[in-house]
Amino acid sequence: MTVTAALSLTDGHFLARLAADAVHARLTGKRLSARIPPDSPLHDDGATFVTLERNGALRGCVGSLEPVRPLHRDVVQNAMRAMNDPRLPPVTPLDWPSLDVKVSVLDRPEPIASESRDDLLAALRPGVDGLILLTDDGRRATFLPSVWAKVTDPELFLAALLRKGGWPEVGWPAGLRASRYGSTEFHNHAPRAALPLVATAVTSSPATIDGVAPDPDAAAGGPGGVASGPDGAASGPDGAAGGPGGASGEPGGVAGGPGGVAGGPGGLASGPGDAAGGIGGAADGPGLGAGGHEA
Image 1 (spheres, rainbow, N blue to C red):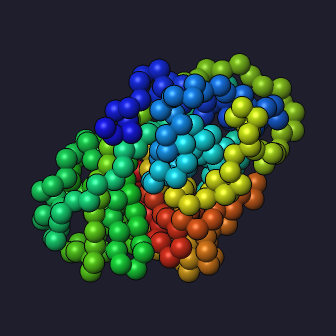
Image 2: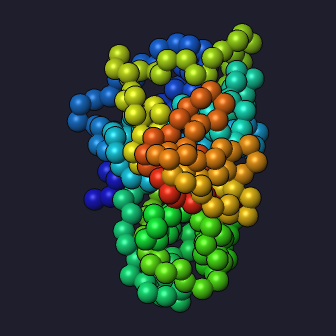
Image 3: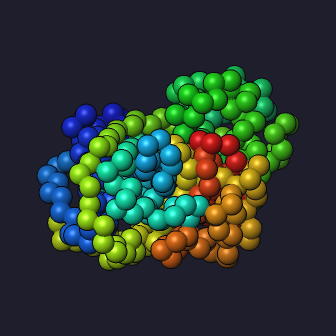
């Protein structure tokens, strides 16, 4: 059974509410409290993306491609990190009344048998497949399934993802491997009650669940995490390639250093396996490239 198949609609709505509650807790400095039954599938390891938008404008998007922590913790971590998307000013109480929160729960990636561009194009399922491209040099890029709503043609979809990863848009890069995954989206929509306009440190102590603080590595963007743009991963101008050990974002993003990528406003730093985001694409971990097209 896939990760998303194990989740009920109630579970998904809980995750979306949990993401919104994590943002609220960080903005107000209050403790996040969430009681999760011991037998809930939300305790299973899972990979998620959290997207924050205000009146349709991106305010942050961060996610994980690999399941490295329980679903509920992954959502909390990604929600808090999305508030400090390195391409954008931090989320503030002014954003809260109009802030829409979306959680995408990803299934485990599955390899696509493809030895050429034509093989991959023939195997792609428009509107269904999220796509990960990876080469032997460690460069990786992804588009979530929701990107098909913006780029409906498989040829254009693949070309945009190649550009996002820093590869040529035509041809077939040496050693290229592809994987696909599905995702299910859950929303927690505005409007919301206004918050007091007091100085709020978005980088205050991490929120807790049942009194347990999140992993330090996870809060800093630990293994398996990726910063992203709308519905997907990091990007740079025209698919800017990553620097040593990291990735460069689009204007307002950050340049990578060995072992990870420095965070944006608020000083959140990514660890091994993470990368700073730009609009739409996905850049990952040490030596990985940044993306381009909106994801």
